[in-house]
Length: 325
Image (cartoon, rainbow, N blue to C red; front, side):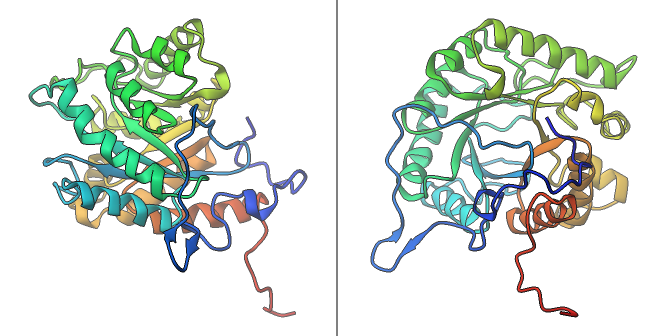
């Protein structure tokens, strides 16, 4: 994959293929609203990220989510949040029915009931260029989500379900493999690492080998080092400083940094005041290999990513170019 500090304009993609088009969001029809997209018979691959950054908007169908605190629990609210994220320029919408933090196990059937109606509605209402992701660590939930139009499985537990890799391979979906050490929904107090950077890298390399052995093509795999997941702030900051170590595995990296505790503890700020710190951390990871940003604040993140793409020579300025002409 190309490094983000490659500022050559050679091979620059046309603007229409960039992260955000000149007119972001769903294509509107005056009579019928957002252009409907048929549910694909097979999951669609992710766009090429060698010279672009994708923004993934978060939609949580939970009552106890970290940042929105249940504001998108209702089905109509969750669907509206996904549509709004697309209007703000999101390339992907990530729908989750269970938060990562420790808690009581949710029956698989209930998780399916939470996420599939949202995915089905979004696939029906969103334009075809917006991909859909499901945040789950259960293979049956992944399969159900793919049946209603999801394209990507975002597994924050690093293939804890032994059937997950085979399910993704069989269905042709893409997969995010995330570093986390605890069993799903279990606490992991006082995390200890001898060398957090290299231990996380080794974990990701091992899980990548498992995914490849299960038959998932490399071009459908994304890696997430898991900032804050079973890591304290100092450990997360150490990982971020050496983010290029994960890019050296040769795959796109997902950076899930939005409003997280390491930002709050770094700046001494509550979660509602962490936007600027989140954007700074995201920009840092883009410079060192991140190609997907999972965020709560889509519009601000899209604008930041656009500007970095222009600076890197990956996209033309939107214009009009009238300054000092």
